[in-house]
Amino acid sequence: MSPQSGKKKHLFCFGYGYSSDHLAQTLLRSGEWIISGTTRDNDKKAQMRKRGIRAYLFHADQPLDDAQEAMDGVTHVLISTPPGDDGDPAFLVHGNDIAHIPTLEWAGYLSSTAVYGDRDGGSVDEAMDINPNSKRGTRRALAESQWLSLNASLDLPIHIFRLAGIYGPGRSALDSVRAGIAQRIDKPGHAFSRIHVDDIINVLLASMKLHNPGRVYNLSDDVASPSIEVIAMACALLGIKQTPLIPYEQAELSPMARSFYSDNKRIKNDRIKEELGVKLIHPDYKSGLRAALDAEKQGYKSLFPDIPTEAGS
Image (cartoon, rainbow, N blue to C red; front, side, top):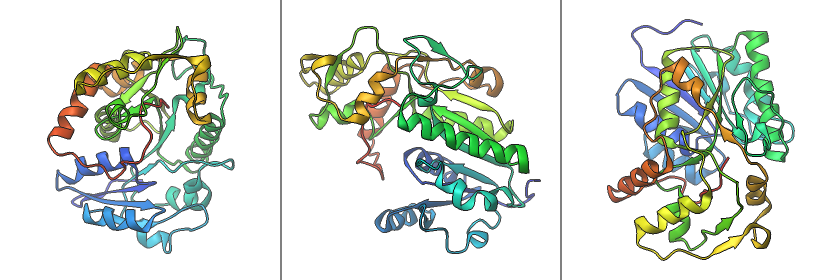
């Protein structure tokens, strides 16, 4: 699979979401990229096209109308479609198509640190066995194995990125505080690892330059922190009075939110620094929240305002 010389690079995003949009807009600003992406929603499709994206409808029951035409000349593929019980829909429907793109140089799958399960507050790195203890973690683990199988069998240049809790402008504790839904839940000894969207892009760009197919990378900042600290800082930045602490046992949480609190681990990120040469833009939530607020003040508008905030990953 050799690069195209003298032509624009072409990124195809299966599941065009928050992180994909930030990567796409970064690449488009260079003037050297074409961006395509899929969505399940016609309104989102129209919005994507306004942002300069070649948009297509796709979900598990709706394959691309003409996959060969849609992926013609594609050099890079980013997959972030939500997996189901059978695994990743992009793999199930178009995995073979992706593996046989003649111009493909790089592919990335956005997974989750939920695949590690609960480590009772201990640290985890990529060399450790995964042990998911939630449905979302189990689904992500299956999706990882599916994409890695194509690396083994068809030489797909896939890279796996296990993301901690994603946050950034339009998707952070600032938004949950403004919306009045932030809960300061007290669970002593518990902490979340997080990753600012700027650093997700930071890592993906580094990986695109230094290909290492089949490799797995943890994406997190340097400091795992309790959610109550993050919400407290968000309140301070916004000048809003903090809500009272709620003992974990008394908190009213959705099944999804409770699953986040059932895992307690600290994600090690040495590999992105040592192998990819990444220097984090936001090594902790304090830097990240300030940057998110600054971006909002400068007029940042998200395509994805309905995504849950301060949830972990």
